Structure formats: structure tokens, C-alpha cells
Image (tube, rainbow, N blue to C red; front, side):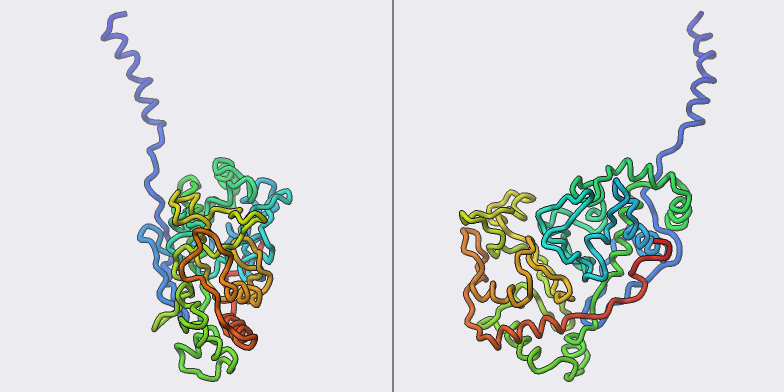
Length: 354
């Protein structure tokens, strides 16, 4: 066969192949009814990424995904298993339990106000809520569902097919769409308008008691409690976290060595050895136990730990030092932290059918 005849014979095959090939999808774009995330009293506006503006459809989808055990390998664990609204969006355990009773080595951080954190997880390894959302799903000691299997499972579910189409338009369900939906829901899990907020920012000087007022003064006084140096209170709002990483000496073994290197495992910087992100204190009375390893059972134990100056180690944060606080001072600090509880807003619990 001559070369020209071979080309003519091949042409139909090439055309058929090109005609059936699916063009690659572009980046997902949320569709539907735009939602404005309103800041509660005592909180700044929630920052929203330009490529994932919240819509009613993506939030509803993310809420369903958050509570659905289908996102775990054996259909027993959901995001809410370790971050439950009934337990302050934590789980009440020293360390979290995943599928098959597997346990990790860190306490579940609350999802409350995670929308305000510039870095996610205790060690800050995820830069956004979107990236955070995918991690536990594939983690072998948490939900243990590889991402390709997750996407196959969701694409085979007619209900999710409908919900993802409403949220992102027609096309296959992708991991990016899953991450964007869960993150959009988590940005609605915000906690403000506590008794403290009404006292500090709302002008209601009777919203907290005398003990809490004394505790607030100790909390802010750099010579007494020095708490606000890391758990920040601003003029118009309070996130109660500086978003930075600090070594408190928590998690030491019997030989005085750090069991968990914390932020160091991410950055490999010596200054980050044993350092963990400052958690928010909002709803703190509902999220016991405390610290990255769950080593402190009560808020009073946390206060006593700080009064003692933490645990000495070569990387102990320079702001950690022994404090001279009476028993009443310590009780007042606890009363202040209890004033940071707020009501759970509607429409963030499990949706119908789950």
C-alpha cells in the first residue's frame, strides 16, 4: 500500500478517536445562590477565597459530606465523628479514634472558627480549609478511604450526582469539588456573640459575672496571666489565637524528650521543634481535654500548667514562665474562659437523611 493510501485509510480512525475523546474539565466553579457569611458579634468577617465563593448549594452539599460515613472505607466514620457539634466540634477524647478503633496521637482540634485560621491542623501542614478537608479521608488511621475510591463511590451515587450538579454544574464529581464543598460548609461553623462578646463589644456589662471580669483582667495583664500575648483580643474582635506556633513543653516523655515534634515535621526548622498552633479559646469549656495530646483534662489543669511555667526544654517559648496566681485568680481565669461559650447556630447540625 502506498503512503498516500495508508493515510487515507487511517484518517477515519483518527477522526473517530478525536470525536470520542472528552475535553478536560476546567477548575470547578460554585453555582447557585450566593451566600454572604455574616460575622457574629466579636468576630471579623470571614475571608473567602476568590475561587470558592459560598453558595447555598455548595454549603448544603458540604454539610451532607461532613456528616456522611460514606466518606470512610468501612462506612463507619465521618468528619463529625471526631468533630461533633454536640462536643464543641471536637470529640471529647484524649486522642481521636478512626475506623477499626485505630487511634492517632493528637487531640481533635475544634472546627469552631477554623475559617479564621491561616494554617490548618496542629502543625499547620495544610494552608487552607480546602486542603485540610481531604487529609483525614485518606489517612489510614482516620477514615482510610483513598481519594480515587472516594470519587468512584460518590460518582456511583445518584443523590450525590444530583447535588454536585446543582453545586458545580454537570460533569464528574472530583476531589476538588469535594474539598470545596466541605470547606464552604466549615466556613459557616463560626462562634461569636458569647457573654464575653456582649460584655466587651456589645456594651452589656452585666452579661458576665464579677469572677469572669477579674479573670479577663488577669488574662490580659502581661505581668499576671500574660494569656492574651498568644490568645489575642483586639479592639473590635477577638479570635483568641495569634495563628502562630509555640512550644509549651507539652507531650514530654519520662526522659524529658518531646514525643511529638509538631511544626518541626513540616518546616524542619529547629525553632519549630515541639511547637503547635495556638488554638482558639471560643467554646473552650466544651472541648475538653486540652493541648495537642489531650494531656490536660480540665481548664483548671490547663491554668495550673501555665502557672507552673510549662515543661522546660531547649525550645520552650520565651513567653512561657512561672506565674504568681492565687487559687482565686485561677478560678477567675476559668470563669472568664467559660464566658466564651456561645449558642450553636442553626443549620450546621446533621442534615435530614443522615
